[in-house]
Length: 637
Image (cartoon, rainbow, N blue to C red; front, side):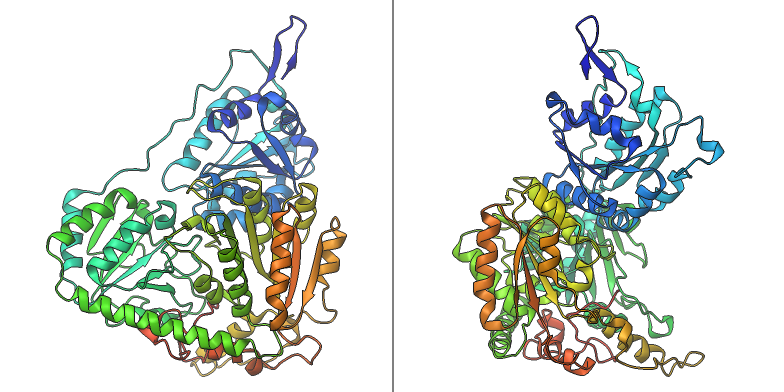
């Protein structure tokens, strides 16, 4: 807005965007500047709009940052991208947002409407690029429909289940003059708090109450609904182990509850082993149901056919998506779970107490095993992830940051130590204290830290005083430009690089593929070498501390030995809490030595206790398939 000749404030169509952002209390737009976007970006320079433009150096960083912001606020993250290259560059994290049910509104400024048919520079069919990873994708057809389209876009992004929406706007439309009374009245809000059908609730409760050996699997809808207490009550009533879907976007169940068993394995036989022996499975908000890469129909379905499946979700697509559901409940988890629990509690299973006692005993054994694993890790020549996670746990506890931290996970070779040791507990934390994505498109964590840290507090009664990301070296090289924005905005984030100088999950993936197809009729495929150079990142070895310094003077240090980790983490947190980003390059292999063989590299994982002690035992690592793979590491990349 500006002042016209009559003394009133000028308004342009781009101000419809700021009308909506003001109504929803959204204060940031993320993006990479382009000429077409300048009219919208210019609107952020007016103090009365109370919106700041967060400039990023790549569109996939911008969308990742918008996702982080959305996770904290529970409101749509907003970004503006530049014609075809802009949305193309953002596809990786748009896919992650789609698979993680992240509310986003992506505004893409198209070339002039009268010119598009002539195929000008950068123009294309933008809607087709974005459609398959959005709830709704549309290109504005006339100047007059712009406000209607914006209202619909934000309405859809926030409607259950949340998700990304894409709007392409011929850029000259944003500069059309509008009157002072031309405003968007509001954004339609569809309440997510609806309960499932009563008869379906009765059926589900009966199936669960009568189960001889029930299991609960939670998906991201549980975390978004803040359904920890209700799920804990159900687990106690049933005496059931609780697993989370592989690559959960949030902490969908508290890890201090003895029913907690970590995430489902990342292999066909591993998932089958989890469900085997259970007669009833309660699949609660379970969205990403096949997070594996190698599957053979001849080996049977992921969930054995003799397991009765009971579904509860706020998304019909996820109910009975891959298998028949005996009971199918369409409703909000937070609203529906208490009704199921009440019916189960009226006639509790007499066997539940014994099952709970067994689960509690096994959780205690798991702790003993992990304590022993940590002690062994402290005597190694390189840094095992458990040492890093333990140092973070101790510092968070001593500084009383349990309700003031967000952990962003992309150490894809090392999920278990962070998921088990960090305090994602019902005593202080919340589901959004843990950030990951369900899509698996690498390069999500470092961008997300920007949006998370920019929001001072989270919608689930936590704040973001301490934001820490653990990212593999391969993943961190996707978008190191993130560090420029972190420095430019003076965001105090601790970046931990788990540096093994290889794509270790791919190394394990090679082993899995050979195990599945090496002797399979019609395939008989084997790799020329089990230790290929193309999976290494060591000639030359990236210097992450120098790289971070080049993007704006960020400080950091290299850490080589386990006994140095605690002090380094302490220094890193000190920097972050004082408003300065810091990078810790943690050498998780002896990088001054020749590259380890795959067998040597897997040694720490072979010894790592399983998180799922109920199905695989707590004393020693057990394989999750016939490929000889560590069970805590999902091989999906």
